[in-house]
Length: 526
Image: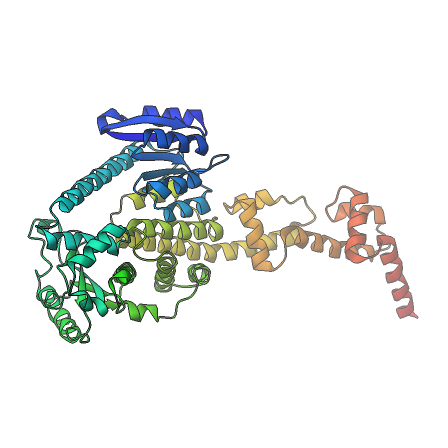
């Protein structure tokens, strides 16, 4: 049975979460609930739940602070965060904290059930791994090679205890100098294999490339999943295998990828080496990269800041084509990767982080585009993707679609705005209402106002005022027209208001303006 704690400052939300999910059917039990972070922290230590389902924003201690406190002592607790549409900064912080999932309020019951189901499956695997590690410890003397592999894995993940590190050094006694110069390689068969091949023997040497690499390996390969392995390669004599592996991959193993770390010295840098190999591995999501990606190469690439690449994406969407948009999105993705690091972030979490960055930019700069997907719709799509590569492809398609809509929308709108200006030029003495003109173009007043100023360099109100003041000056040249009639003739019902506006705009009253003009005429006639 999995223990669940619900934390939300709204009673109705807590009740809804308790009643919406068939907890018992999912082998779960709601063992505690709290309306604030402080009470939740106290209850957590009493009941030790497996899953914490918490709102991000709450008065006092919020959900993020709560999980930071919990993770200090219980790093494996599964956190599911509830977030609102305007919680971008909070949501990004939640991802960095290692959130299992982010759910938008109000939560869809089916989506909530799916997420809880995935969480319980993850916890089951964790429990099996813990049991497995305990059994390994009990048989470490008779099963030393297997123990060695598991401890190396934990050292790569930066989760190894001091006891395990000491055990590793004892097991490698007399061979530690082999690790004076090494690198980690991630060998990935996922491009070559589909679901039908998952039942085959999980061996890293299933290909010629794999066999060659294992000849230079310092230990047994460490399985990362059903398709990929981490291999510690001996570099003391230089990369003698490098040219041959490259040749083989180009000739016959094009669907196999290899990701390499820097050369490292000593086992205590194993975690950093693995993080570098992971970053190189992420780069295989981008087209145009070779089957072998070396961290040293991508580390030396010219990289712009995250903020700069955000601006580049916006500019590409406004003025570029699909290809420049895709390239800008990939550059932004790389910035997110480097900003977050490789090992610490799950692949899907990096994809979700990119989603929040991109969606924020779309809402900030392209809000007027009709059909811009709602955040909940986007999150549902992303949650259905199983890899960061699939997330990246989906985001590329979404961004290029928005880009196409934006560019298409600008062509007719520019001409239509010109027609609007022509209409204003001939009807400015009448009562003109912005919302009527905007609705005629199927736009909001806000979008209309921004577009008018962008296209003509002057605000809608200032443009009409300028037309009316110029017309008033023209009418004041005619001595037959009384000053009191001018306001009405240019579109103002309040004579006093127009008099103030005229003086504020021209620096003089209508009477003074008329007298000046008459004097100039008199002198000209003389």
